[in-house]
Image (cartoon, rainbow, N blue to C red; front, side):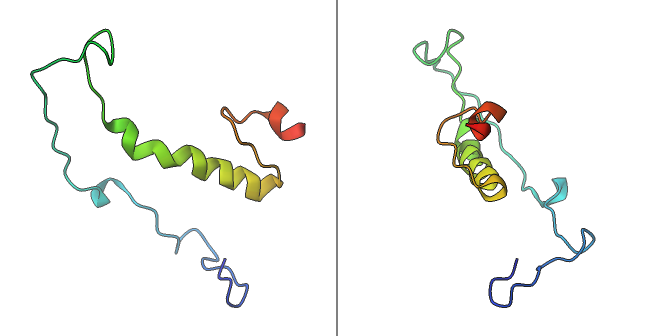
Length: 83
């Protein structure tokens, strides 16, 4: 929604831009030779979690915007929205 004049920015899904596979840059995967047994039993280290950290907050904000109920702990369940 455009807050300046309260009009929808996109009135249909045809003009709504959604990132697709071709928009993602090439990803370089590197394997490390020194395992870390403190992180996991396999010694594997993952960095994929860093890129998705903000998703839970964004979803919680969307739920708050849609329902008016602020849920501050995960997972967001129907029971938490109804209490």
